[in-house]
Image 1 (cartoon, rainbow over the protein chains, first blue to last red):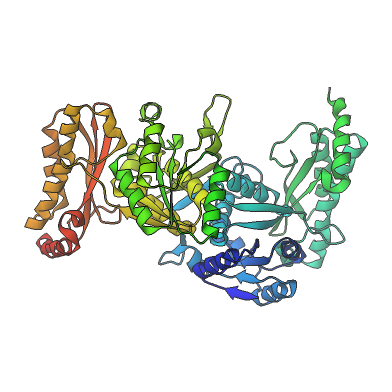
Image 2: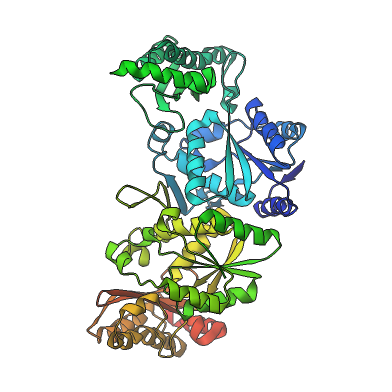
Length: 305
Length: 305
């Protein structure tokens, strides 16, 4: 595995692979890797001749400075994991090589990007500026990597939609591959932020998945008013005092639209705080009972009349 | 010369050239081509294996809708000129293939780009939204063309700076080549908008170049207070009643900074209206007495004490 620090060198080595007719898979990460990231790398290896990962804790997507400082890091361990997983290249740039910095070492950028239908709702509304920072770093990374397949976990559902929109609207020569969220056996979604939870908190956090799962089962059995699903989830989570629910909502799968009734595939989005750790998760109806059942459930929506 | 209308086909044919190890030159235009554009195509042909031009009147960079409607067009003539000049490919997309449009046929875009140090001054201040539209179309076109040399005329000086900033900050694999403004023998800068001027107006418009040229000569002879240069230009132009000067300013070459004294290479920027036609032009001290003389003039700046 080749470790590359300089952006221009990264651009050059990947381009040289492509000129040898190698297809390129790309897995951008913020490090502190877990099984979710490893699943992306493994899938990229299956589908491409070479796989490049990047590790960069992007400062512009942190709207709360403490969150950036506290973001867990362990580069040595990350490199071992990527090497064992068979990544061919890993890009580990410094902040200064990606952004201009001023005399106080603060990031300066004059190019500003926003995706208007993404940055005003859910994570966009709760983390002002977050998605502008994501869009900026993704454009930079995609320009460095060039034509590739890029792998993203659906745990960051809204981020995936942002990237699909960017790619489509700007004609970026990247195929965005959405990969299902990897979970522990108790349902907790893999996340680098889990490292900041103690064992007790980790066990409490499993309610996020359970409440979404139980709510989606209601669709199967006929209850399709979105409000009812949300109320059920809210009440289930609120039983746990340590958890502070930020939002729960249900969107039409593949969009951020909030229907009144679950008439087709839907996805529940959730954000909650446990102590000072903010967790997000989401679950799609298709994930738990497949495409076919989700469509059947649409039939039940006759109720809505 | 191959004419390509579909964005994905354009992306594919250019990529296939690059995979054959051909270097790519790119000349983006809004059509109604003149000798200025032809100079860009000729230079691209000298420096690259293949040259692709594009003709697209980009709606998002017109802040006044009448200006978009009145923008001159003559695709047949443009294609003849490009063919005669030796362009290999020309991309002539429809508005609908570049932008999503709504039911009223208006352009819809969710990705918004701005370059903060560019869009608040000079053309940015006088044409709100103009440079956001330029940045958006340039990102789209650069993503379609991929790695290339791209040729831009310095007549749109601020646009050139915008594109250099975009490329640098986003790591776009494009080398931006700045080309000197092509002028008629009477000094008038070539512009598609000149087509909307009558003969009388065309002769009046030459004062823009003359006033800039005369002012820059003052630097050579020792007058280096920027205010004095601006006053001189303003008074020279104001003698012509038909011309409405929008702004004149002097920047440090390669920037948009406005120095108090001409201590090194500077560039005069000018915008004026003749009837309802808005013209811009600019002239750099290096263009009229070369690098060396411009630097010498910096010595004269001892006056400023």
